[in-house]
Amino acid sequence: MIEKLFGYKFANVRYGWRGATKADVAVATVWYSAAFVRDLPFDCIKCYFVQDYEALFNPMGDAYLLAENSYRYGLIPITIGRWLKHELAKRFQVPAFHFDFGADHSIYKVLPEVQRSLSVCFIYQPDKLRRCSRLGIEALGIVKHKRPE
Image 1 (spheres, rainbow, N blue to C red):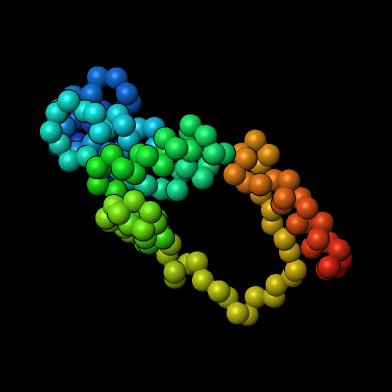
Image 2 (cartoon, rainbow, N blue to C red):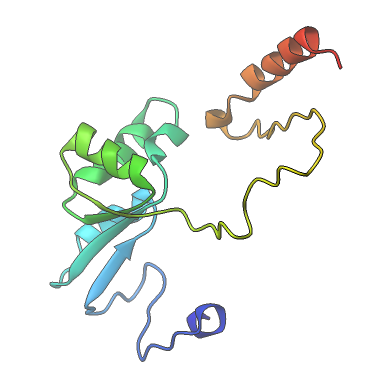
């Protein structure tokens, strides 16, 4: 699958939770995989691909605290963007590496000659508490009241 998607070929790749074998590098990609990588019974480079501040995906409780604690496991964090790198340093004194968001600015750019119309986009996901769907609906009501056009 890696070769098909990305063009790289590796002799040995393992995916999943079972049958972890000795490796040179292990990468956690979500907060609950960080403990698994931390506890691997062999020496290797242990990284954490931090894609979001995942604690905030949960209301205050066990999942919030466990997600937040995952940044304290001693893994090498690699973040998307600089903000997460800054947050890990500020909140947890954890140095991290980062890379910038991947966008081709020759494609994704402002086109000043394009006429724009007024529009609003709201992603309504009530099953995801972090999306604050109820507040979003109320905000849309305020927009409609203030800008009826």
